[in-house]
Amino acid sequence: MKFSTEELIEGIQSGSKRLIGKAITLVESKKAEHRTQAEELLKQIMPFTGNSVRVGITGVPGAGKSTFIENFGRLVIANGKKVAVLAIDPSSSINKGSILGDKTRMEELAKEENAFIRPSPSSGFLGGVANTTFETMMICEAAGYDYILIETVGVGQSEVLVSDITDVFLFLKIIGGGDELQGIKRGIMEMVDVIFINKVDQDNLQKAKNTRLELKRALDFIPPKEKGWKIPVLLGSALYNEGLDEVYSKIYEFIDLKMKAGRFNEVRTQQAEKRFEYWVQEYILAMMKRSSSVEEAYVQHKKNASEMVSNPSTEAKIFVEKFLSKD
Image (cartoon, rainbow, N blue to C red; front, side, top):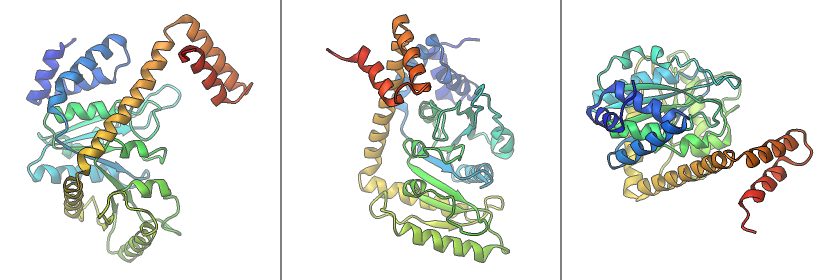
């Protein structure tokens, strides 16, 4: 059944999870008619967006992201808030298929009236997010969700994109063998706001403390992202709800610091500008490819690049200048 824009907006504002889901599906669609309706929907809900705390959560596979999000989400609800989880599943690079299993892995949170869980395929989009995650987040904000938790793929590819759409970037770490800092890219460390060492128990407590010390030393060599904020390295176990209260408290402290420094809205403005730049590129390419002559040239220059007739960046430059140059 097709819903009108008015029906979807009414459903979003009334908190209908079914219609919230339908609105997100509409925004995710690549069909031209759906894009038109999606743009109108997003335009009309704009006045009701921007009132949430946006938290990006990343970590290597096995770090316990889903368990952390489930129990942290329940903690948020216990504090009188509503929480939406946008769980991005890795997609097949061949057919863009996705397992989308997060809803089954967060059974207890899914039962909560004040929780909404939406698994979305990344569809090959880099950065551990889906290309419409930002727009999906706006729908959840318009529906009145206070916390938006974005679980990334956690593959270490361009995680800057996660940081670019959230207010707080949380990194989950687990204790491994050998060098505890091995595999942690400097780029991620430069973007992180809070670090939580997960799966800590009595058997590995000393190792966890050593890992925390190493991380703190490493952070001393990285310029702070926000003036006056010393990145906390916390210990705990998401499975047993240990340390989650401290994470919740640190997130609040970080948001408060950004608010008082006038940085909160400034950063959000910068993020919106980056989304604008992304969609400009998307729409320009889409419009250019509608023309048969442009499509032919696109295919030819792409072929030249793939066969290394010339440098790919050179082929791209020639193609763009051919159709967008004022001369």
